[in-house]
Length: 430
Image (cartoon, rainbow, N blue to C red; front, side, top):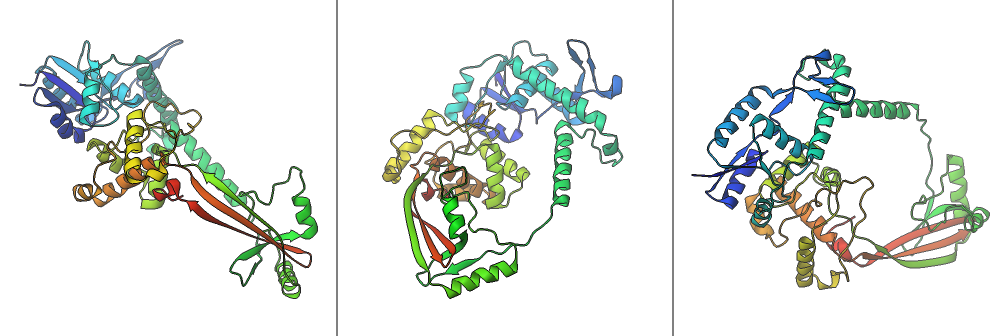
């Protein structure tokens, strides 16, 4: 008979956690939020705004919420210890608080883990803590703002009669951004231009860069962009067909002379491991996944114990994973092992509450996973694996060459590059 109860958010985790924890544990799921703000009081907000405080009134979230609460209360009566293991983020902490309140738990233990593996789960169970009320209050503040900002702005939404109650604090701002951008698009005046170039028999293409006078001024040591600047346009813009034809005629009438050759080797740093936003963007471009599909598939990989928690804004990796990745590279790709562990710059404002998204075990054989996972799940896992390993590799080395030519008074320029050391690009093409 189980003596301990572990409450998680997703029912998809129950089987895996039950296998890890054994028969002494009963694992149940809240299936996300179990309570919501009531729809009473002023403006049906469900809370009262005082001068220095907010008093909220919560009710079960529909019939499902009420049924879940009753089921969890019955489970609590069967055990001696209750452990709350909702997701390791602000929303998860808030759900844990709601569970404490709804189930009348006096002193529940709170545990968090970023991967569903035996080592991580057992380590978390051995180090329980109290609820973090700072996170809880932050989550409750978000709940209040959702209704305060969105609910009052939702009369138009209600007319759709689709069951939606609030346009939300985020959707309201997003709609404003979309409207502003749409006005900019409508005000845009398109302009035709011609890209003029010369194809040489030696096998390279040189683009028009201006006249000899303009080019010499461009190369002068002033504030102008250098022609070797990789952000500079490939060709000087020609805005009329007549001018394009004039340049072509000059190129055909005058001999072409090489006036300069420049070459240098640059280093391209490996990309950081995935965070939530970059995972969604990359899965969209490479796998044609919608953001919703990406998170759904990532959730299944997390619940299967294959990747770390998929809601994060941190590019940090645990020392244990960095060591494991380094050992993998030493065994399979020793030339790609950097002298020291790669460090990636954090985005400004990142909370860094969790690790980046990474595989829990770099040694899991892809042949086995291909048979265990759906095609979508396997493809997303491989993408996460490659990005995490690439982040721990040496930079790629690229040889860049620029050839400048001149015919008459017109200057042309060809740029090319060649990878001389693959580095991280063996695993991640950019």
